[in-house]
Image (tube, rainbow, N blue to C red):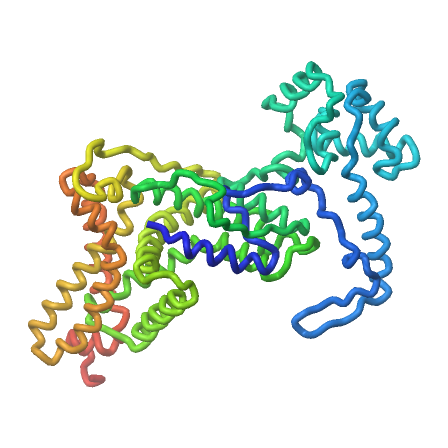
Length: 476
């Protein structure tokens, strides 16, 4: 149902820039990155006369680079100081004692006032737990052998409490970032914006294994959730289009993140592409621009097939699910996301199982469990079938000379139906249990669209319409 080779191509491509995006599974994190720290600067980053390369050539930094050099040295000093191993027995006496005794030489503060301000800053950032704050400074992690188990248990219960992260930066700047159902993309984006890099690793023996949806309904439900999360990020302050320009995110990496969040919007032109063949058949009109449009789509698919190196069967399966998901889950996610972010209306789709026992090969693959997402692709199928019937009827009434242009129109309509074939197979295999409301709404929408298009007839000029009705008089 989903070609994982296509995803691997994307991850491998990003590996040469700043690293692949965090896709929510099969990942290991550096705890310093998860705690919101900046990466350790290398000696190359601290060179005062470093060459800045761009698409237009290279140039040397001027006088402004000296100030940045000093700031980077200070940052380097503090970043390197975030690796010490603290004595947990001293921490048990309280946050103030630990900061006053241990942090003066670690964090580089000389006076007590600055030290207390740093203490409050860390408490606001990580919460009211001195043991946990000390643990965030340990690069390798782990607990020193001098730790008191009773104190450690008490602090652990305090940290995992529901109200611990209130009025802190958890979920805003550190940890998993809140504000989207796809918190993995948002969290990885924040890490890359700070300058961290990720590395793609695919060993011969799988390092991680997990379960995946095996039927079309569960898969569409998952795709709906991902697309909704992308729309939420697109309409938030963390949108890659305008967020993090003062950070260390590379331009191509930013473009990759933008592509990750705007892809649900492609459902709108995709729906138009799927309806165009039916429009041409119903209105008996065809344009060379439509033919060039579909040829460009075919050419793009062929190039993807060659560049990816995958088999044609895997590529075709990915194309089928792209059309099915684009005309259903992605389309619903766009409108649901707009309602949720702009109007504050949280629309939930109810998932209900319509059958428990399935017979036949791959029966579970074509199980449908809810009604809302079935309407758009079913409408597209019905509309193209109506267009095929209308086109054949017109050709029969017009004579053999109209059969030539008809074959081209029929090819495009059949091409759309072929993309929706897995969906159609599941729908026909459950004709006795397909919700009646889905059939009624799909036929109703297809009929309304067909009659409205015939009534408006936008491809015919006003003078031609008047001549056909005999109302043009001497102007004919």
